[in-house]
Length: 185
Image (cartoon, rainbow, N blue to C red; front, side, top):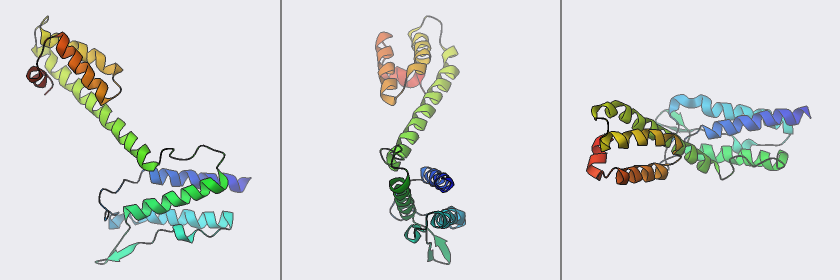
């Protein structure tokens, strides 16, 4: 049972590496030469897994390509090998558990990035409101719009909800798009 626990630790570590690896934007995107430890760590884990399982996993080893005196790894190759190794370990040892990265690693990472961008946008809007709200007199449509928008931001969960809130408040306070644009810049 101790072997399975050790395999599980390495399996989780591999998932951590994959979750932190950026998606390639272009087919030739690669790790910079100074990031050699990224692929060395994976190769060390593969060595440990081979000792624990007795299975050959050499095909998942990360082998850098040399060019111009530098070694580099294609992000697509790195992610593909890492994903393949994780899926192999899942199928052989952990199929009774929820599949890692349900929906696929790219979906999980994209969702996370999208959520982070949404949160950042909400924070930026809140900062703009806080900075500009005192420039408007109490009782004006502009001040009312900004006060209600600030209160409503806490319930917003997506960009679509934010836009719906802005348009509903603009309609309520009879503000045009040009005026809203001035208030939120």
